[in-house]
Length: 126
Image 1 (tube, helix red, strand yellow):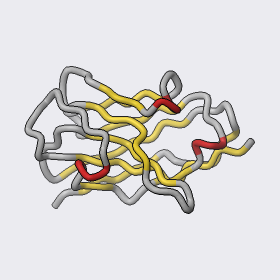
Image 2 (cartoon, one colour; image 1 turned 90 degrees about the vertical axis):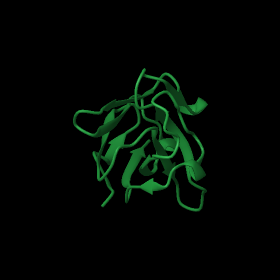
Image 3 (cartoon, one colour; image 1 turned 45 degrees about the horizontal axis):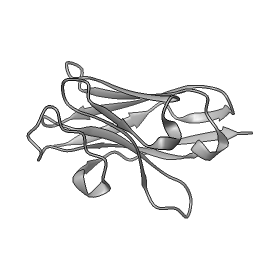
Image 4 (cartoon, rainbow, N blue to C red; image 1 turned 180 degrees about the horizontal axis):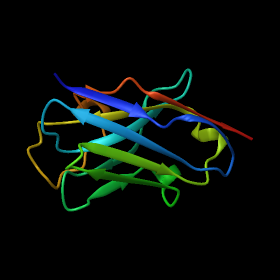
């Protein structure tokens, strides 16, 4: 049974940092990513990482502030979020895919990810 479980969200002030974690289990995953969804908005891509070789991709609004990483031995993926802004407020979702079969592939579209966590709330106050 595939499970993705996020943790690490919370209420912080603008300029603070948070580290989100995602524990993955149930099968081998290739690309993994983080998405977010604010109230009344569509789910949007934040960051993604390949299974190996450290290939990463970020949406422009978080470049230089967020860092995605993974530990395959622990089946974990992380999102270090620095210099948080009120516009980063959203529910953050971990996502994983198994269909690419590529250890270098980075996926950034919602439809590429068949597996999702339940989400963790991040609220940034001004």
